[in-house]
Length: 595
Image (cartoon, rainbow, N blue to C red; front, side):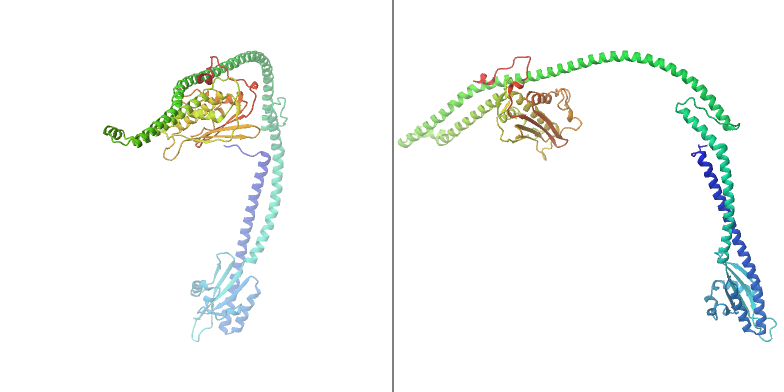
């Protein structure tokens, strides 16, 4: 059986209230039904008596032919307050007499008894009256046969009329209902007093004592072990209280013993915990120192490897630039003279052809064979294109010299655009398209930047790392060559308070929001094993923030691209910033090598 959800304090009065309400309702219903039945019986008896008396009187008056007295008899029925209508119909169901004058001479169908035609027929055939109760029990109808005036020569009258009496029960039932309610109210008052007495009895003998026991158990459950249930008597509640007190006494004794044991155990545990805590703290401190040392060694190793790679790259680039620069300078220096000499020779040939017009077959054959006119025009174009080519090679060598300043350990005032352009030149081969990716478009939005005091080689390394990451992001994104164009946008500008800003953005797949806070952490990479060390952006961040006291931040939207923004001061004394240091010997200045 499920637990009763309410307390005795509320459940007993509720039950008594429900019981009293139901009982009062039953009493009211019973009294009302009985009163209505008495009213119906009394009115039925009255209707039967009135019907017998009036039908007999009308029969007597019609035999005598005294119609006026018959009308008087019908009219007197109005004195009965419960009689609503009295009507006398002839043998053809037409109204002869009625307490309501407007009904006279009407057919049965036009009177209140229209739906009782069959009953009228039965009454005339059986010559016995009927008492009927309406379906809503608000009306009683008395239908009696009335023999009318006999035709001469008849022993029994052949014309049988019908008397219709209609009684209204509404007023009588209202009075009966009022009387029933008064009797029910008296019974309800008595029943209420009885229920209150019962409730008071239960409140004193059960509810209050049970509440004391419940309160004692709750206080005991809260830890007040000295609490006892003070309930007198010898009934079941008193026995439960006695058992509760005995149980509480045993639990109190056991608890006191247990508490003493817990205190001793707690003291021992605290002593042991203090020893363990001290040892753990010592081990933790040693572990943190080892981890910090290991991380510093790993960072230093990665930085040294990266610097050594860039230094080696600088040496290689410097050597190549040096080897290329000398022959290129030789070619570029002589190509101008060659162009002048060729133009002089061509002019001389033209003069010979103009002044020596003698036809010489061998000379004419040779002129036709070499197509002298075409040769004169094409030679100048070839020499001019050679000059343009040597100038381009010189520009490439100059860019290599600018990029290769990795080992410079002092601040210099440089043009950042030159460093960016030299880095783009180094990475030019990676911008070309292939079967998986269209050629990467480089969009330059250079502002009017002043010369900036910085470590030029280190900033070139920053540009190299950021651009390389952008290229790899575009290669990994697999952009659809038919609809999207891979693009790297470089924007430079001067911002407030003497700062310059370099923003490098790509339209790759972007960086997930969950890893954006970690991209500048050392050794953090999202590339597969073997394809990245995780030090590129970490070194760039260190160069910008620590070596140049600048700012480097990332703005990335997944699915749209990534933008890295560099901010450094325009002018800063080199004494305040220490350059990178390497364990290996750096390459000499490219200016010394190339000059």
